[in-house]
Image 1 (tube, one colour):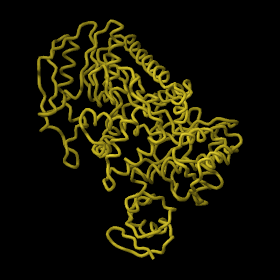
Image 2: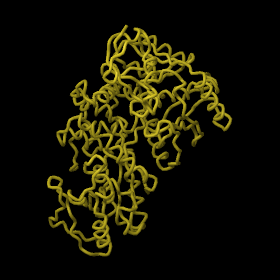
Image 3: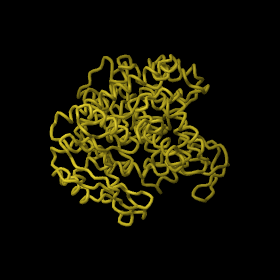
Image 4: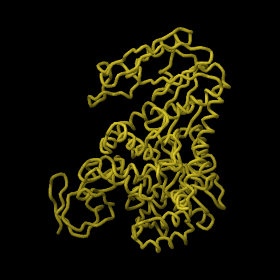
Length: 551
C-alpha cells in the first residue's frame, strides 16, 4: 500500500492505480472537472500511476493549466475526427492558426471541401468519440522512432521540429490509432471533452470551446473581422518568408539567414506603419491619434515610428500618455482585494482630459500634466501646447479605444489604432503559440532590465494584468480604424537568451514555479540568436534594450 496525503489527510491506496481513480473520490468536492494532479509539486496527467508515498493536489478545468489541457485535448479530438470523416490520405495539412476570442481557427489543405455536410459530419464524429470515452495513450519513443511515426502520417512539420530536439525521447499521444505530439499535458480520455462546436469560418474551421472563467459553458462566438484580417496578414508574411513553424525558423537560423529574416520582417512592419500614416493623412481633419493595446504590445516604439512616418507628410506629432491623467493616488479606485486598480477607467481623470483636448481643438493653449509615479500626484511643469494646422497628438494608453475616454471629442477628429503582439508562428501545425506567452516573455525581460523586477513578480501579477485587458481593452478592439501586429517572427529566438536565466531563478515550491517550468520547456524548441543585428528602432529593442527611442 502507498500513503497519499490530500488536503492535510493521509489515505492508503494500492500501488499502481491511476491518479484518475483517486480523483473520482474527490471530484464531488469540485464544481469543475479535475484535469491534472500535482504530485510532490510536479504536475502529472491522470493516466499516470501511483508508485510511492506522496502529497497530491488537484487542478481543475477552471485553472489555467487545466484549461490549456482541455484545449489541447479538444484539438486532438478535432483532427482525429477530420481524418476519420475526410480520409487521412486526402488531408494534406490541418493547421491550428490562431485564437479569436473563444474560438480556434484552423486552416485545412487537401482534397477536402469545407461545406455544411463536412461540418455536420465532423461534429457528429467528435460526439461519437466522446461518447465512446476512448483512452488517450501516452508513450515515450526514441526520437528517430517518433520521427518515423510522423513521417508515415505525412507530418513533415513534426519531423522538422524534432530534428532540433536535444532529448533522446519524445512523448507521443495516441487516440484510436492516430498519433500526434502536443506541447503540454492531455486529458486521459475523450469523455472529458464535453463542450465544443465546430463551425465553418472564412475559408477554414473554427473550434469553439469554453473559456477559462466558465469551463462548463460553451462561449458565444462574435465575429472579429478586423482581428482576423490582421492575423491572416501575419500568416501570409510568415509564408512569404518560408516560416510557418519553429522548425522552419530553426532551419533559417542554421542556414545563416537570420539577418535577412530580421531585415525583411522589420521592412514589412515599417511598410504597414507607413500605410497607417497615409490613411491618417488621407482622412483629413484628424487631430488625435488614439493608440491602445494590451501589456507589452510595443505601444511606445510603435508611437515613435508612427510619428516619424507622419512627419514625412509634413505633420508635427506630439506624444501624450494617458497615464499622465491618472487621478491622484488617494483618489484611485481599489479592487476587491483592496489594492489600487490602475487599469480601470475611473483611475483616469476623464473630465480633465476631455477639457484639455477640447480646448486644444478650439485653438487654445493648454498646460499638459505629467504624473509622478513616485509621489502618486499629477504635476505641472510648464508643458504648454497649442495645436497649429500641422500639429497632431499621438495619444497612448490602454483606454484609447474606449469611447468614454474621449467622449467630448468629435469622431472625425480621432483616428483609433489597436496594437498587439499577435503571434502567428506555431511550434508545429497542431501546437500554436499563445499570444499571451510572447507578451509575458517580453514583459518579463523588459521589467527585469528597466525596473529590476524578478520573473517571479512578473508572472505573479500577470493574471491581474490579463483580467484588466479582458475588461478594458479587448472589448473595443474591433472599433479601431487600424490594427497593427507588433510581433516579430524571429523575436522568441532573441528573447530566449534573456528570459531563461530569469526563469531559472524561480525555485520549486513557489507558486510561479509551474509557469516558469512550462515557459522554459517552451523555449527549448528555439535555437537562440544574438540581438546584435537588431535595428535600433525595432520593437524588440523596447524589451531587450538598445533602442534609439526613449522607451
